[in-house]
Image 1 (cartoon, rainbow, N blue to C red):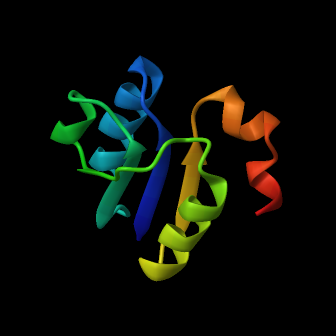
Image 2 (cartoon, rainbow, N blue to C red; image 1 turned 90 degrees about the vertical axis):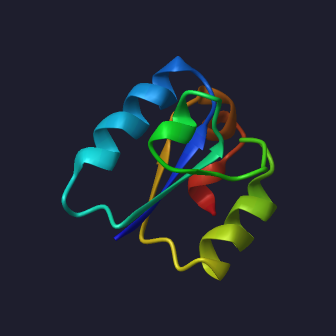
Length: 81
């Protein structure tokens, strides 16, 4: 399973750590991530508020599951996409 984790703070670092431990996770992408997150997956150079670009990334890379960490993209309606 391919997973996209959205966010770049300490919360996302911990989420990335745990997601990367799952035997179901084949590949983990983190947008935008941080230096610590790079240990757990592939960083994607997209901000958590670039919703249309994140949608394109999920389609282009056949992402199976998306986890949203910060509140800002949720408040901007990312779940509608």
